[in-house]
Length: 519
Image (tube, rainbow, N blue to C red; front, top):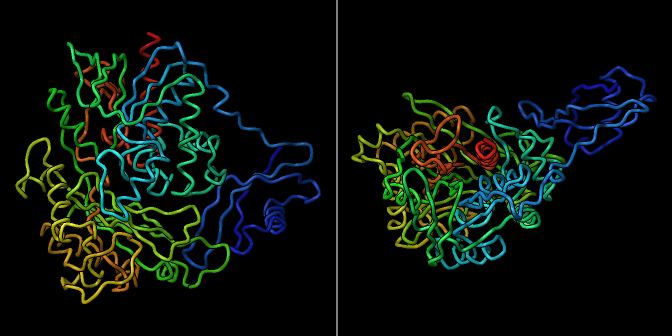
């Protein structure tokens, strides 16, 4: 029989197999001569006092071997002639829906308005260096969706919706490091995720599925309670059976199309704020009480949250050793996001700092109707663009100056390649949003002493944390209540918040379609 226990090791010991084995034998109370091999099940970093790694380990005695995990990809079926499922969007929801189709014997036909990951790089370079935004190929649109070039963090709390382990295992089978199976907060990295995404596409093609890029859906042909045909910008028309809509949180034209076709959508709460960037050495010092950090320690991260007057203020998408990137999807707006390479070796640490926005807030600010949240986002994004003299230089203000309502004399160096524009960000934001963020930051500064510093910079605006629109669906069948073959899915539909939860939602939707086809 195997033996399980948890041990603690220092960062310098984390890769020392002999020390790990010795500590396990002592903790498990077994004779080391009886121990054949060890398997780390979970690895987490505890930095509450002196930084240590906590390892959950399973030890196998002589004559025993770890149970080999069966490859999920081995269960994929040839689907050339199978029942087709049309998937709009090649982000995590769309691609994992496609993989689930292969497993269940359905044929995925994927359409994406953007380009494949390799061609997409050229458009990202144009945004960064020339300030040119391609409305179909950018940090939000294109193969892999928003997550491909914005970090690849895989942590999720949505354990009840499906198998997180299955999603992680599929990522490993397509080239991700096996470390994501054991890390408490797994992360692939912006530099490695494109290869994983390309491998997923190849699996879809190898088993008879289809993937089409530069395919922008501009209309639906709806008859009675079904979508019968998809109409594309290039004039192509595709007859459809079951349609999965997985277009992401920034596909505003899709929301408008649904509304125009009188397919019900509804406004929902979301979050908006700024992105805050510190020197990574500063965050290391606050979290580890050391800088430079010792060997074996990753770039330090943080998670901050508080509730004020019934409203949350919280950090979002924290990127240690990362950089801030321009995430605009249209000309004439500024949106920022964060990303980290796999090594997290940038000298900067950044995180969104956002607050929840309710429908009541929007009404008080004069925004109403289905697209109130979308219009609120757009107005702030466009105000940021105008404040930066109509460039992609992001409006910025030193952190303490932001909290105290002062214009900064100058700005620190930043990872944001288009550059920063010195202006009072707190003046550009709506007054209620600015006031509440400042109030929340003061509270969070007391929770993490040293966080509020003018060595850090506030960059505007972090506005695409989640979709301001929900596309309703039946809670059991997962199809739209008015359109029987339309399956809203993922972040854009309002049912996910990140790579893992979006992937799980894609799998769930395909399972529902499979059961419908079987019936």
